[in-house]
Length: 101
Ligand code: FES
Figure 1 (cartoon, rainbow, N blue to C red):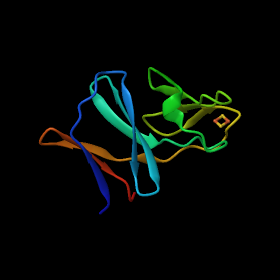
Figure 2 (cartoon, protein in one colour):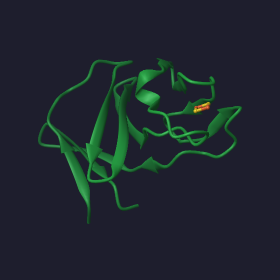
Figure 3 (spheres, helix red, strand yellow):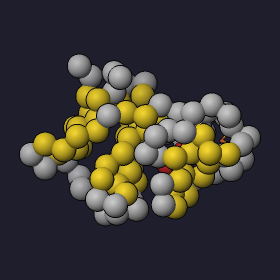
Figure 4 (cartoon, rainbow, N blue to C red):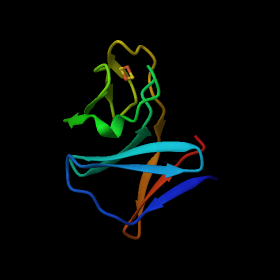
């Protein structure tokens, strides 16, 4: 199983960009729960972490596509493909992201 362990805790509404090998991950905390999705916009490979997170929606900084960070679902164009959502769990004050799923 491939995983990323993060010991840094986030505040609600905060997000951080992570990179493990060739995977770019965006870790967000919303309403006390952690969510991890691909940090790469499905439109043109831009880092979504440079965009704005409001509620559960991250807006791509380049052309404004919107994605739900709790599911990876594309919520508005110009992108039309969803981004990958990764399973997250908490264990011993660490956030564990399973990146092989
Ligand atoms: S690169 Fe994200 S919307 Fe175009």
